[in-house]
Length: 378
Ligand SMILES: C[S@@+](CC[C@H](N)C(=O)[O-])C[C@H]1O[C@@H](n2cnc3c(N)ncnc32)[C@H](O)[C@@H]1O
Ligand code: SF4
Image 1 (cartoon, rainbow, N blue to C red):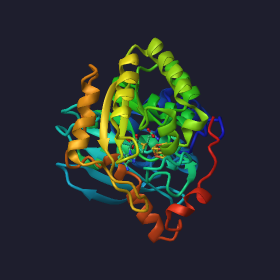
Image 2: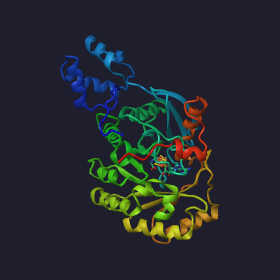
Image 3: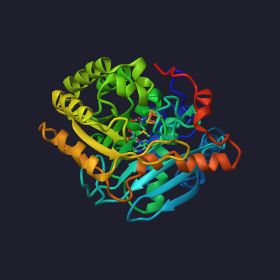
Image 4: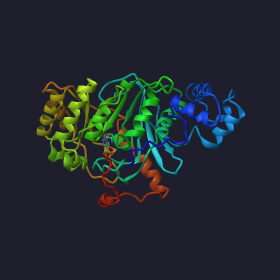
């Protein structure tokens, strides 16, 4: 994955400064950039021809070199009072999912009256976590910043409401697409852009320690969620290959660095998988780790994924695990409500669509390794 920021032809993530250089290339004065940004982000027009106060030559230039929409809404599933899944087709024929979680459903551990959107950052994922549909067909490509921003813009239009909380928990590893993700966050947070508070934007990562440190120095106060899923290297290695590259000691060193810089609580996501990571010992170790860094713990019973074998523990075992963690003075929630197969579902809709269209072969567990690209993001 290259470090360069590919500035796509779409203007959705362009900063005001970048728009000044766009209009300058068309031979126009810089005040035109202000007009452009009004049309793009306040009026949210979808074509340049709707920008009635721009000059004809500028419109011709923009039509020739740029675009405002590159995603096509292919399908919407689910209901307004649980979760709604949006399947978007990208310009190259690939698909990503975005999931809208309505107000009042608890997410990331807390009941909320916010509308949360779970966005994708990549097509597929290279990290091959053993519980996750997103990695099942390997990694294809990074999303551009504008493709990320457009997910929010399109869902807001379709749902007819503002999104006030964003989580990078859809398909892909956001920190493996660091530059595009932070570029998108800049536009999503900016007052000239989508205007979502930085504290209402959560980046979830499988634990790319170097990029966690980099994000700690990113000026916006975004939140961090760690897909932990194993409280010892032995258990985590079985579930998440990334742990061999960045073991727990290295990960926690990066988390302490984060805490020094951001001074805000981290969330640990911990999927409960029967007989894999649901032992009393894992609960105690998890509690110890969380308390040590003052993290909140969000337990998620494993959601079955087509093509993967694991199961969730039964309810008494889930409760027992939660109670052990709680008994160590750790803030812990167990997410069991209907509609909470959010992130697990994220990836499955796209997998089904691309398999049916013959874009990818139906993933089978034994083949998984051979079709998954190497971890090469750092
Ligand atoms: C799909 S990942 C995307 C963000 C980032 N790559 C990460 O790993 O944090 C976000 C979260 O989805 C959840 N998830 C994935 N597969 C799941 C499953 N089968 N059951 C429950 N949650 C799942 C996990 O909590 C994971 O932490
Ligand atoms: S959990 Fe995150 S890092 Fe792991 S395969 Fe899924 S999307 Fe990738």
